[in-house]
Length: 307
Ligand code: CP
Image (tube, rainbow, N blue to C red; front, side, top):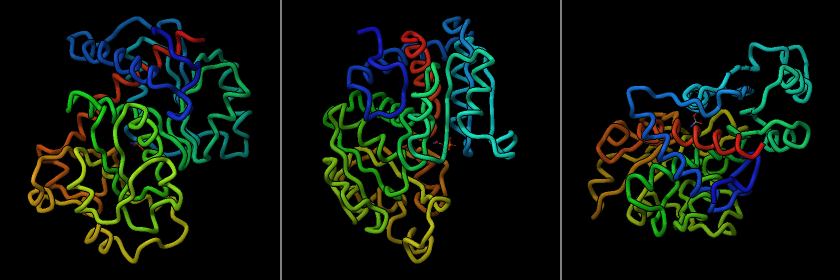
């Protein structure tokens, strides 16, 4: 297979395991390019890409922009905080105005679940979801699984525990879909209040004891408490959360094996993860960020082939 089965990347739920494998094989090639003295290829020289971000981002936004520039695309950036959205312009009007400037692809982050799906039905450009509310963050899941494959040789048969605020996390849902499509076993772990009620119906194990989750897994993907999405109190205090669910070096030392530590960022150090783990030899957090550029190059390159 040399083409994706879709012309948009809206979520991992909508793509096949063959699509994911094709993205990984393409990312392997781009990772090699990124390690050369000249890190640029002409693959998207005639393509214009708009990065439109209605929500804050550091990693995803920079990573997409770098990926686009490494592929020689023309890039325009839009941030809602400095745009006419502040004057009441709708999402469709905003995007149609951007597209009338002959944009071929749109990378969009939005706080509303389904916003990129809505857009894909109304415009002809390829859409890449860079995170839609609490729904999906497909390129984060792809780079996470790519990093596991790189570190452990394969994702198939590996046990991955996703630990933290599962309820408000788009990273958790995309990771569950992606890891299962690649044959991994997935566990979610966190306080009862931060675990969605019916999550077991997705075929994941559910665990409330973080020490048991760490003992079970080969890889622990630790998630941030998403206070900005919490309208009510789900636990008494960050201090208490850290006491019961924070991962520290002492916990890893007590395991009878070595595990890989991941985090999509941004990290709240001392809350869900201590620095003695985040900066340890167990952590592949910065490798995840590095792999993000190659994986996003692969996604953009392959989507441009199904225009
Ligand atoms: N992992 C992630 O999506 O980070 P940003 O919010 O900084 O893009």
